[in-house]
Length: 186
Image 1 (cartoon, helix red, strand yellow):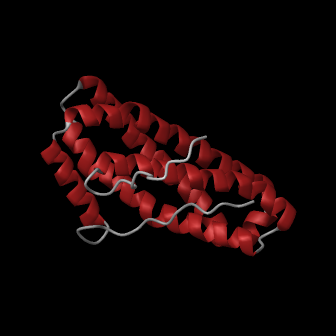
Image 2 (image 1 turned 135 degrees about the vertical axis):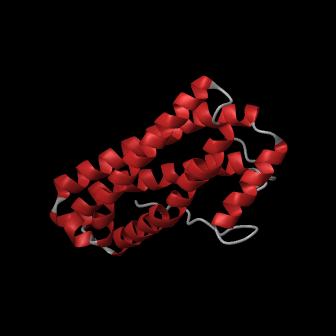
Image 3 (image 1 turned 180 degrees about the vertical axis):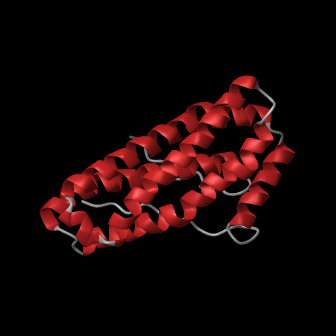
């Protein structure tokens, strides 16, 4: 592996498609932590490390993830609809997946806010986490592989600027807020 002394800056609202892709990376990081959480809870219970990870995952999927879905549903998807029939089908599918993901989140959220319950119901916890992780990772991959490249081809620089401004406003200002980074669990 080579070391880059000048790493590229993380995308910001001037690169809204890059920012959406970066969000998928944070989602993947949180999903990896969720996967590690199952054996950690079995071995260590709801210790301080587990509680910290659970709180950060809860915070992310309660704030940043809904904003991400709103960015797509309210701003990106409308920009793309009607420009490509295949893309219209994909957009409809992704919208359905957002609703499915919300249902998976509704199942996971109580376990994150009640760590004792997650420890007391290990099989249920493992199943809920597995469903959530599989669905989110598949969804993000679909968006990265099919939606975002096509969006980059279809929307203009001016539309990207408007998209970025809407995303920033949703987060509370011209530059938006910061999204929590994934917590790792050993």
